[in-house]
Length: 85
Image (cartoon, rainbow, N blue to C red; front, top):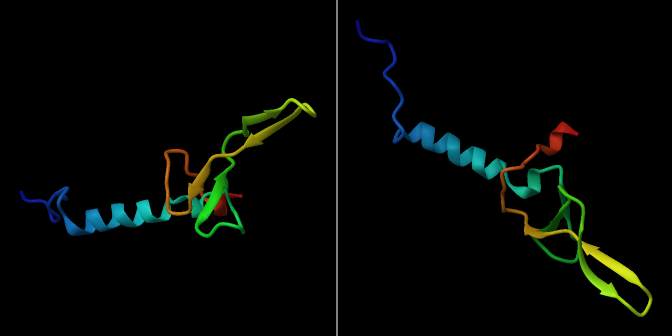
């Protein structure tokens, strides 16, 4: 007996469209860890992990930490929806 719906192929347009749409949504700008920088368009900082030591000023013993700078249309494997706050 034939199934009412044939198996979905990896080449099926709908499958490819859904994957592309998901990738587009799972961009940094939609992640709760992304903090947009006002001074730089389409750029921001990823606050998923603590800042990394970038500079040690020995004159006043100040330590400067930075967060990774990312584009708003980047993506990674640790995306967390901004709406889940």
